[in-house]
Image (cartoon, rainbow, N blue to C red; front, side, top):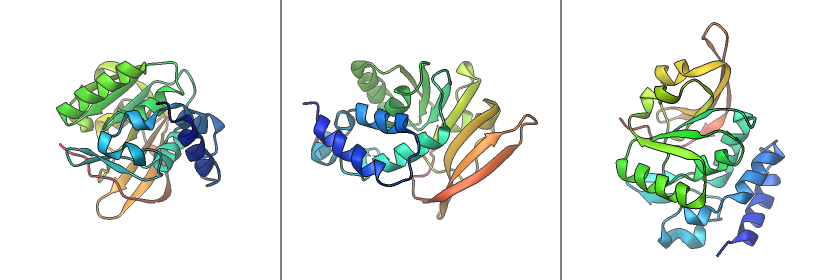
Length: 207
């Protein structure tokens, strides 16, 4: 079951929100079968614009949030991307639709890392997943042109910032009880220029 009509309806809803500026991101969301990444008990809600539980106290983000974060990364096909918080693998699949490189993703929960890798491989997405502490990034495959976090952090992890090239971008929910979506660009001197894009609510980073 491809659920193509459901994806088309979802993309139509997202396109009318005026928060996603790149048509390529909408195309990516429309291409990824979200129902393949949610538990069977929630398949009927797969194309509702809402987060869903995926086990281990984690969630799959609402499609609009995945689209907004991906849009703010401003990806080019040659970009090397680091994801912190694989979850079920859905967000990485959307990003993989936009780049010609292998997406690197770190997941704290080993069972989620394993199941996400299996699902991504089965569906043909060029994503490598490892179980580990996302605060360390993934130095073996650095440097990266862009990174994003699917979990909230009180501050952007230093190692992740270090693994981004000058001119690169990081998108992440930052804060504790009150979180903001932060878009940071790394300058030539290693400092970050930050903007914010509204308040969000993500599960906290573990580790």
